[in-house]
Image 1 (cartoon, rainbow, N blue to C red):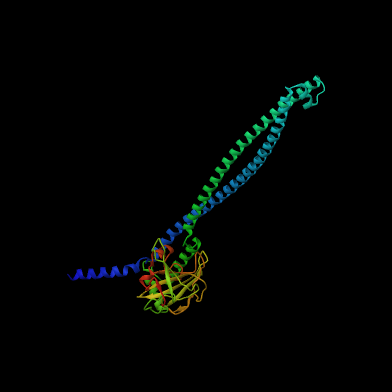
Image 2 (image 1 turned 30 degrees about the vertical axis):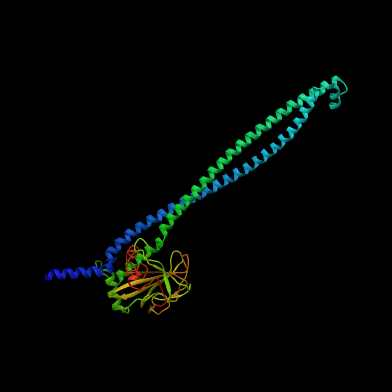
Length: 385
């Protein structure tokens, strides 16, 4: 009976603390993950390079298509001019034909009218003149037929070119859609992802730092970091957590691993001062891949470290290594980096990939994220901290 009670107590303790232990690693596991992540990142790098090569080829094809479309448009314009000119000639020839036919009809009338019409003084002269009329009529018919054939061919060519232009325009649209799809794929590969070189470098620095700290290969990294840092210089414990700004509201909630890693906050004051969510020490200030200003802070909470990350700041008001309280201004809310308006992106994690002594890779960092609302009272809108 006593054993069952102990087991129940242990299970309760595990259920309560297990969320805090997710992402805990030993150096041996850390190194294995570095190797795995390095391979995965190289695969992503190759995929991005392949995508960029495909996009470059698509752009080349689009330019070629645009040139062909432009050439066709020029040909169509020239054909329309030729058709217009031919129509003018037909109209002119039609008028001439009417006149010739009038003369021809008159030629079959009375001699007096013929003399009047053609000014002929003798029958011989009239025969000669009628011969000329017949020749002109035949020639006129030939010219008319040739003009009609030219218009037919030009219209057929115009129809063919218009059809090809439509095909090329559709092909161009299809290529542009494919380019957009590849660009989206590339963006998803890069989105929220530190550069490959940066991640590999950080992972190796973390590993070397942990070994230099004297962490054992089979020791929980976070426990080792906490133990070593408490001996070297105690980080004051935090008793509570505060909102990161005096007044604001939630613009996007927490999505967890594979989703939105933190929470986004806005404010009517688009350059409002930002504060740490708790007392702690600044472990990093930097610009991310997209140019966002980022501040990271380590906190001592319930005998373990947790980390808070603040992104898209307008400016830095603190520096790495500085001890801060929840009242210290760390910067102003901004719109730097991959952002669509002034806001603060806040993440809370049980380890950190960027901070010295953060003790985890980027992959583990993502899994270690916690909902900020688990630590901070966050109504949809507030007017105090």
